[in-house]
Image (cartoon, rainbow, N blue to C red; front, side, top):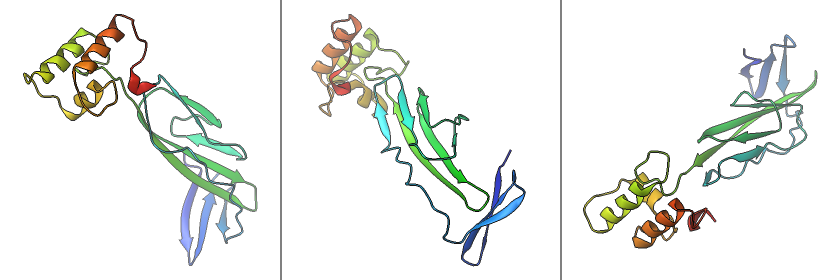
Length: 171
């Protein structure tokens, strides 16, 4: 259910507040709190990321449906937050977004797990038996040297047998 409708009259931005059943206009008197800084887009090896919209707003509405200042996300995607400051005289809204990508480094065959098949694909790639697409290539570069080589295959095998618990690119 929408909470507002927007319109522009001359140079004044106006918004109809459905819950208050009235129009209010930003005639430059609306005092916006500092912008929400969700940071730059994130590519991470972590299992989850905490997003914090900051203090000082009257309400928070995340694209996930949550209405808290802080949320925990576990899936890749574009997340947005609409923050509001409202009183009956000035009603201010702003929206911000961030893209989060959770990567499974070592998952060369793209089955969402790291296993011996992934190390085998890296070795086949190194000797020229197969090609890797861009996503596979990025996932195979577990040492972060922007190349795929035998060290990546060795690290994947070490991860599988538990000798390491994360890849160098994730440190």
